[in-house]
Amino acid sequence: MTVKVRFFARFRELLGTDIITEPGNGTVLANLVRDIAQKNKEGYDAIFDEQGSFREFVIVMRNGKRVEIADAGKTAVVDGDEIAVFPPVAGG
Amino acid sequence: MIAIQHEDVDIGNLISAAKSAGTGAVVVFDGVVRDDNIREMELEAYEEVALRELEKIAGDATRLHNLLHVDIIHRIGRLSVSENILIIVVSAGHRPDAYAGSRYIIEEIKKGVPIWKKELTKDGGRWVPGEHAHGAGKNS
Image (cartoon, rainbow over all chains, first blue to last red; front, side, top):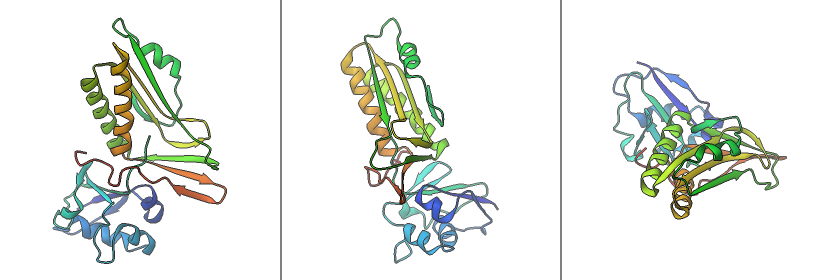
């Protein structure tokens, strides 16, 4: 299956964006993002804490809908999903 | 008009279009790039989600504050000092609703619309921290 991962703002600068992945069946959202983030230590550290959990301020969306970070470790991605990961917003 | 775009807009035209027979007040909010010792500002959006959020905010503001007309134009891309970032034009029958509706819209945008700003300085750049710790509200 194919899943697209989009990072924004500082996370995008560190990790890139519109990353097409081919995770195995049953891959959970947190693991998918963790695998991608590990390519850049600064990017990984910006998103994950020392225990490998999403930092408290990180926002995760699946197909444009918010996923609580507490649920990201048990939410399996499916073919065609778009995952977005970004820091607190600052528009206006 | 609800839009996320690179181009600037003619605020005068928006004001004209906001007026109808029942209009008693038009309020314009124009957020601009402030010179905090920066060269430029770079704005980035998760466009599909941000546009959907702006449309929801406009609808909520209309309902809550009896607005007759709402425009929200948030610009993205690279902007210079004094350029417009965000233009909100609302009209209502009376000024309390127009002021309250305009204020509601900007505060909701600050809370949860996925847009980010980076100040570009002579030494590099710095991302502007959000005013709300979480952003992109849980209802997104």
